[in-house]
Image 1 (tube, rainbow, N blue to C red):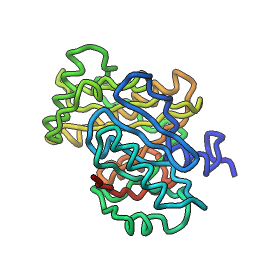
Image 2: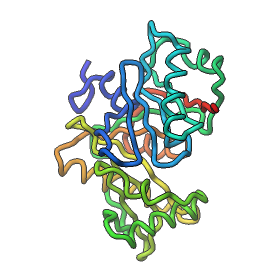
Image 3: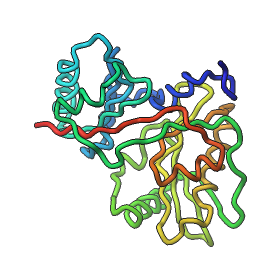
Image 4: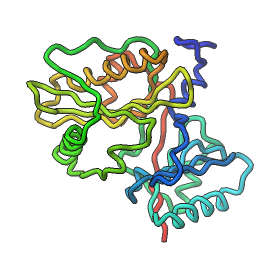
Length: 258
């Protein structure tokens, strides 16, 4: 059955659970390893949330060998923690329990919803200006939002990202109060939206909504009419109100290894 936007439900699920981002540029600090079993993303920092195993298709494979191979890949990159994202489309059945038996533990958050939106999700929010992040000063403002809201000081490598990620700011009365990003996927109809953070004291003022609309506009300007995302509990209610719908669910496990 075709969903709105002309894509099938399984296609939307796969786009949201395992978004097909372009290959990172050679020589950068972000690297990708792909085979028929899974996709490994090695991020610019050792944070396990930046070092991810996803798109798990392990039916008929030696699970212990697959996990050992992934751990070896991360070790060679100087990583000793990673997250495994077990989506609705992952195989085989019972994979979460089998990975736990190999030493993986729960993560925070322990699960995310895979969401998709195929129609305009929001209108501009009065009094909130949005802009593309392009200058050093704007990148510093993005870093400041993460530091104030989450206590995290992202590196320049992460902030500036690969060439297929664009960041945005939202302002209230000239002050940068929220940030979010868009990943331009290899799929010619879809984009992935993520990286949204709002200063705690200014939540509920519409900045998040404004950034969703800005990214829809940017995607539509390039002929892309599908937004997908992986949503943690805090953002799920507003995204569902804006017209996103659940197309899958992802269990997140933490893997620590020497």
